[in-house]
Amino acid sequence: MAGSLRNTIKALQTFLDTSLEELIVSPTSVSAQVLSLFHRVAQTVPAYKDFLQQQGIDPTQIQTLEDFVTLPLTTKDNYLRQFPLPRLCRDGKLETCDMMAVSSGSTGEPTFWPRFITDEYQIATRFEQIFADSFAADQKRTLAVVCFALGTWVGGMYTANCCRHLASKGYPLTVITPGNNKTEILRVVQALGPMFEQVVLLGYPPFLKDVIDTGLTEGVPWPQYHLKWVMAGEVFSEAWRDLIGTRVGSTNSCFDSASLYGTADAGVLGNETPLSICIRRFLANHPDIAAEVFGEARLPTLVQYDPTSRYFEVTEEGTLLFSGNNGIPLIRYHICDRGGIFPYDQMLAFLQAHGFDAITTLQQQGHAPIRPLPFVYVFGRSHFTVSFFGANIYPENVTVGLEQPEICDWVTGKFVMQVQTDADQNSHLVIYVELAPGQTASIAREHAMAQSILQQLRRLNSEFANYVPASYQTPQIHLLANGDPTYFPVGIKHRYTRSPENSRID
Image 1: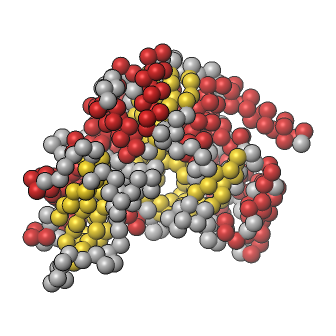
Image 2 (image 1 turned 90 degrees about the vertical axis):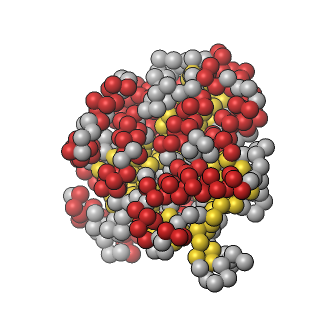
């Protein structure tokens, strides 16, 4: 007990006394950090010790990074679900963790993720990057409004804790937690916002848009609060960022918002920076160059990460692995997200070769520390696509069509894609779109949306443009009322695709 208390105090003191620059730039090499983590886990986590033994691996033989990458991948199925929860924790003791989160995943089966307060400090550093480098919250009185759902889900409580850690470090930051109660969010922003120099909303992108749009209809003066926003959980387009920025009076797209790449498994793995946003905005306007970088016709989330905190690898299939210390330490954990990694110098050199000087461009927009951290890009799970005439259609492609100025005021941003067959067994791309509150459907609106989405699909998705016959390219649009119980039920996590079974046009 005494040793645990000393370690807790030491970790807290280190976090409080160490500057952001020192926390990010570790004097220890990445390979040494990764190998040290592996050996600690192999020695102190009973489940991983058993896992290696079952695989016939002697951990003392893993002495280099080349050795490390030969270790078997861990997954939910081959590792987490094979051992009792306590054996997955340090020293086999669940009681060494003081917080539990739950994720349901795509199967609906709950997974429990324990953690201790010391696990939160390295995640708090990701929040510190955003609040300091993007929002200058180390110098401005800031109200952080946590709009993620509270309860056992990871987002709300984790975010609130990390923001409070920043306040403990001396940031003039005050946290309030209305969760995903829209009425309460608008109430606290209007009541408390005038007392601060800026307000930061933290939540899922479509929910934040709903909050902002509802606030506008109710006369909330968003620009007066110098609003910033932090997102997680979904890929969004740069057109979406511009749309939200316009509605809240944003003056600098690279500095007024940031997205987190986070998971219930291990907290925040990486975060957008002013530099990564600057690069992504360039690539959004140059889809051919983006396709060279990312290998696909859709724009992923692009963040920077600290390899001494979360070490990323990429499988031959183009999915991501990471290793990191948590309540359940994870080694070469296969998270199933499609994506890739780029060393910092390689990314900047590639862009320079295509005529884009990212650092100079960013410095013209505002001052931000340039941190030479590597980049990771994330498309998300591949099952969120539909296949149409052999072309993969991504939600991100459709989203841009709905975010055009002549369309965006009618809709919430939610939609469901399906490939349906007619009586002659011809396939059609059908998209169900949720109307914004108070909006009504019309043939003219359906036609306008179909043309807007078609234009963006042709521009952004070369497979679509070349594989799908012209006579089948125009999607069929169905406008549904806000909160439609079949496609857009309230309170249920939204999915942008549905399986083609029983999908028929009569």
